[in-house]
Length: 68
Image 1 (spheres, one colour):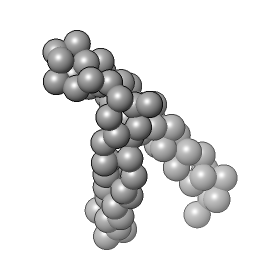
Image 2: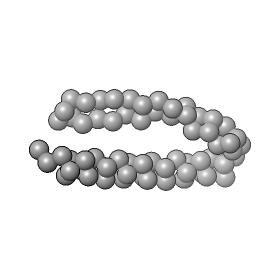
Image 3: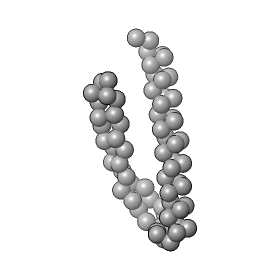
């Protein structure tokens, strides 16, 4: 195993997930505010599950998204 390639691969994956996830959340919030579904000052529970089937890895991370 090449540690450097492995670490770079993980970082690229996590960066893609982070950027894409942020964009999706921002779009969902903007749409909900525009539709009047939310007021824009809420806090939402959030959950992300990381799965790597080949490693039999499934880990869930819980947190919250605060709009204010």
